[in-house]
Image (spheres, rainbow, N blue to C red):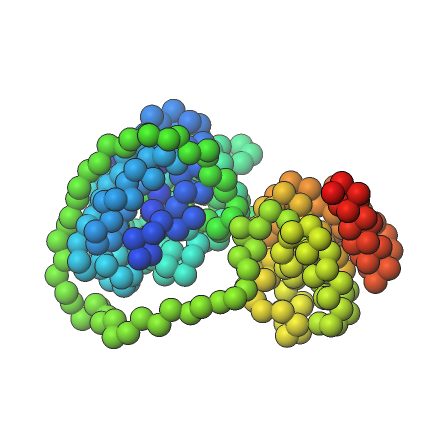
Length: 349
């Protein structure tokens, strides 16, 4: 493999039902930053689907300089084999140095298969991406390579953080957790170079047939879109006690979320879980109430703009990442805070 042939930062622009997934726009934002560090001029989005050309302009507005479109009826709905064939064919033809894929249900299926098809490595569920030297520290007898993609992810059940590189193969591939990277502010009217590419599809025994698609409807709020989250942990004590968190969230026009312990206890649905095995969030304001602050939970919310922790244990690890901390009984503190906020809002009206 001639590494010098591989150039540019590519992202897989996931779409479902001809609507771009938020992770595609987040990846474009990070790709722009990585491209600058590599002195690359273009960021390329790879768009797979059927009748999806109308999505190109939105990708351009969020940072794509070029969009490679593979448009074919075989790609109307996600199926592993045709999508793997399409994306692997794009890689073989255009030879990207870096390819980023969202760690969604689709991305977690597609990413490993594509990396195997093109004989490269894949780092899954990344929470941070940087350009730097690898090994991180120079060691005698070991060549230190420069301008490598350094992919950081929780490891060993979230008890440590690992930084991984793929110095000897290309592309350097990573799946990235939704909600971790930031979109750029859209550039209205921006245009991208459009390249139409189709490797052709020949059905084989790995092609599945979709008999029926049943779409799940959920009344649960999307915590990744929330600007204010009031999150509760095991320390809340009971599912009934979440009522006081809901009252606080209502006053703040926020959304209730929770830790894994709450989900494991059956108090709240998994869609509301924040953390390594839940969702990664970055709201403007995050309340951590009755949450100890295990690294698995912190990995999912530490990028919040402001973190307020309420816990009766003054030594709880959550206070290490909090901007403001209140040591006290949440059953007294939260209702008092809610009451005060109501009074302040009423006075302003």
